[in-house]
Length: 223
Ligand SMILES: C[S@@+](CC[C@H](N)C(=O)[O-])C[C@H]1O[C@@H](n2cnc3c(N)ncnc32)[C@H](O)[C@@H]1O
Image 1: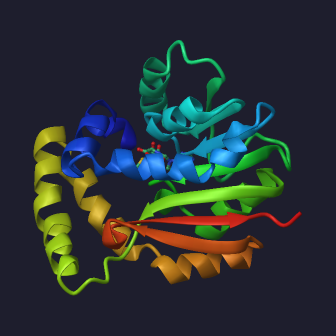
Image 2: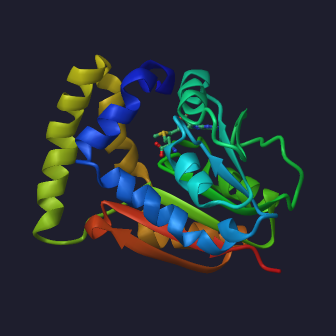
C-alpha cells in the first residue's frame, strides 16, 4: 500500500493536514532534544517512510540517526531527500523483527507508523528491546478528538473529505480510506498508555496535538 502512494505521500501529508504534520514531527523531535544533543547518541526512527521525522531528528542531532522502514519506494525517497546530510542512515527492515542488538539506541521515535504494525505488543517489545536502559520512546500517532465542537468537524473531514481528496490526487482511493479506518481501530490515548506500561515502559505520558487529532506518547525503559 505504501509503495503505491510513495510518489504523492509527502505532498498529500502536507496538503491534507495544512502543514500541521510538520509541526507535529517537530514537536516529536523536540521531545528528544536532550538525547539528540549528545554526540555519542544513536536514535532510531522506525517506520520512517519518506524520512521527514528522520530529517527533523538529524537536524537537531549531534549523534547518529537511523531511519528504518520495510517499504523500498518510501526509503528511496527518504534517501534522496537526505542526500548530503551526515550522521543519517537508512535501513530496510521490518519493525517487528529489527536487525539491531539489544540495548543499542538512546531513543526510538515513530511517526504515524506504529498504527500500521500487525501486532502492537510485539512492536512495542521490539522498541523496548533495542533501547538502552534509561532510553526514551516517542510515539506520534493519530488519536481521538474529545472536543464536542472540534470532534464532529474533524471526523467529518477525516471520514468524508480526506479519503476523497487523497484518493483523487494519489489515484489510490483504498489507501486513503484505510487511513480513517485504521485510526478508528487504533487504541485511544489512555489505552496506548496502558499498552506501553504493559510492555515495561515507565513514566509514560502523552500530549494531545491539535485537540487530539494526533497524540505524542513518551515513555522510558527503566535503568
Ligand atoms: C504512514 S507512513 C509514516 C511514514 C513517516 N514516519 C511519516 O511520518 O510520514 C507508515 C510507514 O510505516 C511503514 N511500515 C509499516 N509497517 C512496518 C513494519 N512492520 N516495518 C517497517 N516499516 C513499516 C510503511 O512502509 C510506511 O512507510
